[in-house]
Amino acid sequence: MAKALQINPRDNVAVLLEEIRSGETVAVATGQEVLHIEARQGIAFGHKIALANLDADQPIIKYGEEIGRARTAIGAGDWIHLHNLYCRRGHEDRAE
Image (cartoon, rainbow, N blue to C red; front, side):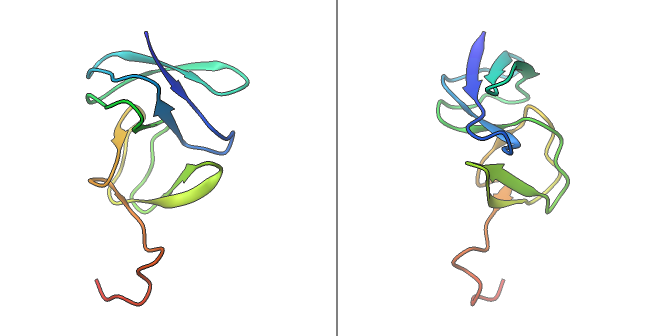
């Protein structure tokens, strides 16, 4: 079973500790318990997996802080990366 780590209890994502395939069950250590989530895509080592369903524009929390927002709805077990996450930090003065 693949493994992932929730870094902060506030996080709605976990970091994969190994590469996983679509459909594989991921054991996520949260500090209090181990969650089991089915990966909806293949995800590379070190990338993020959603721990819960997220609505479009909902904050994505890692390290206990907002690192961006969901571009579209994201399901629990989805890979979170640049294709479905955006961050305005550092771009506030730019027009879209």
